[in-house]
Image (tube, rainbow, N blue to C red; front, side, top):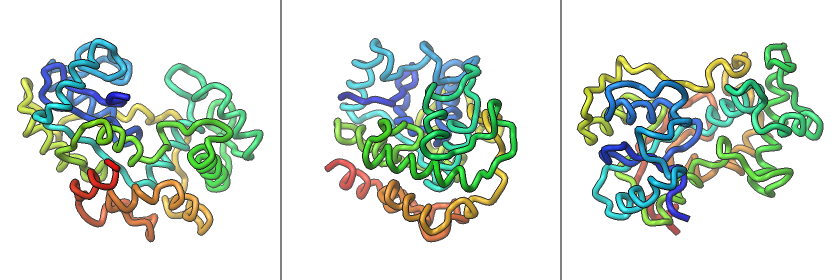
Length: 272
């Protein structure tokens, strides 16, 4: 199995387990900048040199050796499950991707046909009932995760605990798990540990939100999208995420975590 979704700076200064929709573009660009003094020109997910990624065969032995030695600072980043699934909907379902096409080819037509989801027309620019469509998408997301039908779950809406656990189960260990909502605080600790070749001022770093502008803007407050049934589905999918990463299930309007992550608990619960 190895360490899928794991990135490491070319210099080997830090190891990062990517969790989709949790500031991964910005984190990857900071790691790239730390070694090279410039940002990658394009989406960091497309970079095939300048950093190590598990998806690149030549990087795998280096990442595996580093992770198993447990001497290099290792981290990941999490996000409120309510805002993460909403972001996935507007970016991946409603939005046109950077290749000019819909995400995953026939998935959106399937959602329109089988679940009655609207996506704002061919360009994702038309008005539509965002709340009704999102709730129907949520049912689809639950079906993919719980029953693997009508397709396997997608990495952008599968639970964060699932991404984070593969790293632990295969022999990795985290030194830090921080929150997207407190990004500068968490990332500063990483920067301090990595001792970058090129100085990083987080206040000056742009946010590399690769999904920005892909789809329609969210028209309502977060809590408006989640009625009683929606929250039931969210709990079914993300129960572990709420519990382990200290987010407020009872109040969708509160995106902030209620406490710091207990690393010992995460390693114990996700390493089983």
